[in-house]
Length: 289
Ligand code: G1P
Picture 1 (cartoon, rainbow, N blue to C red):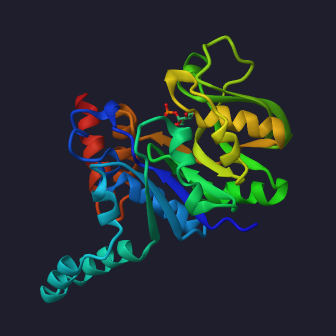
Picture 2: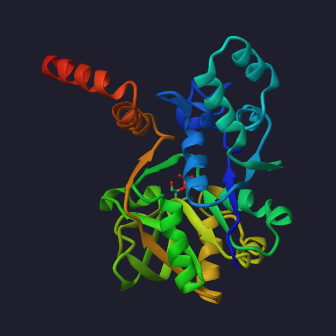
């Protein structure tokens, strides 16, 4: 079964980033010169996937517009001879085919994924969470697709976190079946520190078999009163199997103010035009700190 679609839930209110997100969707906050969602979409495209299903809510139309063709802007840039900018804008509008599905009530991540069933139907698919940016030589989603193709079961991306932070994540316990790949025995959402035998935390990348939809339909509200994807994954694990993959790469939590600053510095230093000047500037001010 070939993986052709990526679901990106973008309906969240972005409360961790207020007041910036009062009007602007958090996915449209800029890191250097592009919105965070574009980094995610570029990872998906670099992994060979062109169909993106956005799970949206009211106030989020800027995200769809960002990936759409803008006749007015492209005509303006062409007339002014601003060809580099025109190429950049065209590149974005040609990246992906977008389908949007509305999540009518904020009932949790599991619910958001569940509302895509009518679009995805019976194919395996990727889920990418917009807050998690992963920088890696080989795109994280591509790495995970290799694991999925080998084991034919759903895969979640994991990384180790400090023990006192396990209550911020979905945590997996399991046996390492090959370097970096774990067969999961248990997955639990935001466990109390000390209540789990592992510090392997799920970060926002999943390859899911379509059977997850049936599990989601049977999932009751969990942590925070929300329908948790993690709870449905534990059901899927029990009924079929579930793997975790410790990906190669660095992850930034761009939905958190400090994580966002870290990501901005990373991408600023990497930027082809600005990187050199920015590095010099950081060196200068580092002495004054
Ligand atoms: C969600 C998931 C959690 C996962 C995390 C990764 O939590 O529910 O299992 O570890 O994303 O970022 P949230 O950050 O939405 O609270």
